[in-house]
Image (cartoon, rainbow, N blue to C red; front, side, top):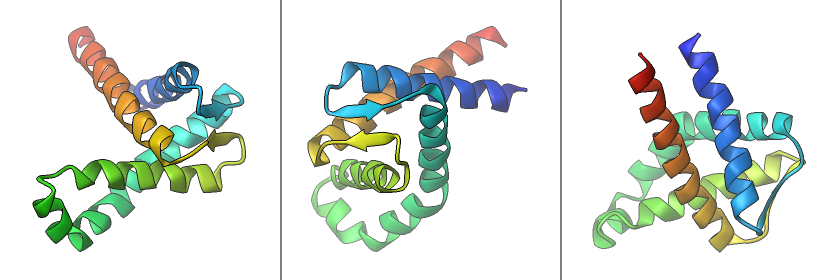
Length: 114
């Protein structure tokens, strides 16, 4: 049950983030849920591989390259989801940062509720 609530709140976070950023467009809540699922899957499978392959760049930039990896994951999800559109790299970067903030806030709310 907790996993379902967290997934639904991730969809809400995607909708709120798209509402705040004019360069990100989500047509409906179902598309937001699909985006949340694909971002979660990409963070689970693809992100660790990208981090391993880019260790030298990440060390040289003191970890800031991880933001670039997050933005690339958002652009990849944009490519696969028709009802989700990100205008350019900078909007994807802002989307990933704000989405992370919303998800951590919602996660904290769930922890307090327990």
